[in-house]
Length: 210
Image (tube, rainbow, N blue to C red; front, side, top):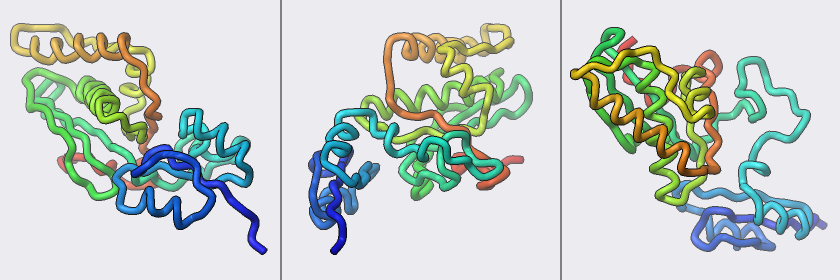
C-alpha cells in the first residue's frame, strides 16, 4: 500500500495543504508559476507551507551538483522562472535589456535602447526590474542571470559601475538610482540564480547578437 503524502501548494488556484495528488493537481494544473511539492508527513508540510517555498524547492543539503551546475540547486533548469539579459553595442554604447518567461520564451519586459550604457549596468537593471515586477505580482519564482557581476551588485544593493554620468546617459543613471532605492526599500523572496551557459546554452533572454 502506497504511503500517504501531503501536498503543499504555495502558488496555485487555492494555496494550502492537500492529502491527494488529484486535489493538488486541480490547484496547479494550467496555473502559471505554480509552486508545489509533496512531503511524507503533515508536520513537514505545515512547516514548509509557512516558510519560503524555495527552502523546500532547492536541492537537498549535501547533494553535490554536477560540474557547471548552479551552486546549491539542481542541475535541471527551473522552467517556472524569469530569465534576464542585456545587450550593448559598444562600451559604452546603445544598451537595452529584457526579461522572458523561461517556460515558453515569452517576453515579459523590454527597456531601451538607451545611449552610453554598459552591458553590466543593463544586466543589473534587468534583475531589479524583474524582482520589482514579480513582487508586484506576488510571485516568488526565481530570476536567472548569466552575469556574476550583476548578481553581486544586486546582492549588495549597489550598481558598482565605473561609468561616468554625462548629459547623454543621465536617463540610465536615473534608472540606476531608482533601482538602488528599490533594493534598499524592499525585500524579496525570489532566488537570483546564475544561468549556467556552459551547461545549458545561451540564456533564453539573450538578444542573439554574439
